[in-house]
Image (cartoon, rainbow over all chains, first blue to last red):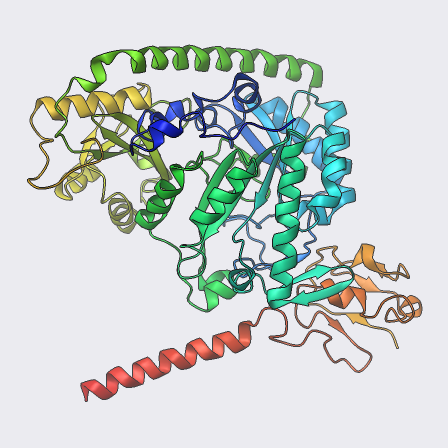
Length: 499
Length: 100
């Protein structure tokens, strides 16, 4: 089966610069998908922006070996306090991974997905990876299995992936040009040799593209991850997006490079910078004309547990799991109930939105209103339901006359640690304010007196009026309030997206 | 003429399945090569397999204690770092010079 290519159906609208998928409510991101694909992704938090507010995932770190080196990765790194790909605290055997998965799925009934993403490359550890998949597909058949790979060993693994009913595969594709690849990948291990430079990049790229084609030819959903590295592949990624879409990839996730000297990576130590939030969004928007883009990625650890924005890994160490008493059958039953409930709610919400989108009222407003950005503190369920001081990240939305769309998560430091002292709350608050400097409103369930004043002074309006409301509706309501108050007249001479 | 794995090994398992002689064993604090089984892959492969996939410079050494992957040979980090430090120093020197 050949997968339909996303975007073709809405190609006419995309040309106008304001297609339904790009400028409509972000929940409509999957609105134009064929039903069969929507059914596959509607409870996968990494494949559906809607689902990620509700469904949890976990990664099991069973795959330590890697067959390539990337300049953004340091194989020595192992830290509990760092959250980024390639980092784990506890390497698991397949047995331990199965035990942990079942324990987490019993404790968190919203858990729908088990992924293997490292800390090395899952397909460079085929025995450990496939043993884990084989056992889980038998013992927890309701959990979706997915895998993330650099693609080098992908063509030889496609049969085995299909055999285990793995229908979500992520390939990290950073380039199509070996000359660019040589600046990202210093070496690969290939046919019993270490291969360097352009030759290594050429082989890797060839294998990635071949693997992508083989997967989509079998109807396996493929997400492509690309790391945006300013000055290296940033201008090349639009071409990557176009090509992988043409080959049937379902979703493209352009992620910012994470590079700090203390991570000990080549890029970190050589001062290669990551993109700014604005640069990242510009590239994502540029790719969005061609491709279904993922914007809610949290670049999580290879042993992450929970909703995408949170990491509950510490609750499920092997030691703690050993002490748990679990009724696995009952847990699976509970998961089925929870999943049915969430799916019904999501479907109802989607139907409501489709109705609203079909109504002509949206174009009735004055077109010259400018768009604004709104930061939202949410702990899940798609609601404005988190205290400002408890937020470790904010979801940034753009509200315009055309609707509300999700832009990106912004990580911030925890302002309030919950104790009396507030630690270095002062400087953490400053960093939060600076991270949200392009937003005009912050929506949260509650906010303290001190940060309230500081946000206002920085020109960001704190707003606790929409606590427990659905995020996109709350953003739309705030936009309407500001419009009614006359606060959104576009500065003269400026044309905005909605115009 | 066996190879040896030293303490900088990160226990990533990459080498273990590649050894044609099953000479590599999981051990603590790090993986180990059973000396009497190691042939340096002579007769099996052109390149010693463990050293060809090991991501850590200096983690596998020959009988003289010489690293099979010396510093800088895999990641290019020491050389690149030296360059970037040099550049920084030059920039600092230039700005100090222009200020003077």
